[in-house]
Length: 102
Image 1 (cartoon, rainbow, N blue to C red):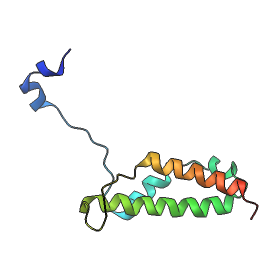
Image 2: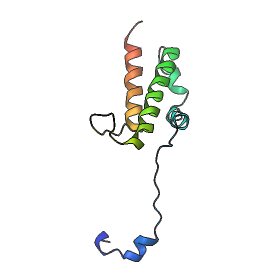
Image 3: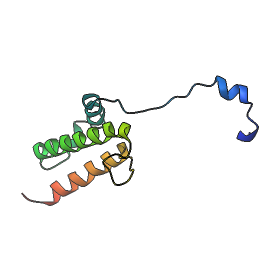
Image 4: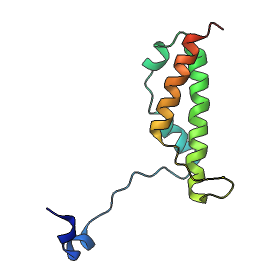
């Protein structure tokens, strides 16, 4: 079916469902931290450092997610740091910690 021929009355009666980040930092932090299972710490050679650094990444993610409601004010350009970026950062962090002996 073509979207061009969708009746306007049907469109007006539909409900929009959005998955938007909460507005406060604590909720954003909990939401970011919930993306990771405890297994991620056990898979790393340095679980204590992994946990601390991952918490810092989640904190950064929570702050950036909360800043979205202010638009581009204070930023040079718009970039939506999303959950996929957070997961990739955690993968890079684990690789870095596993590769470095310190």
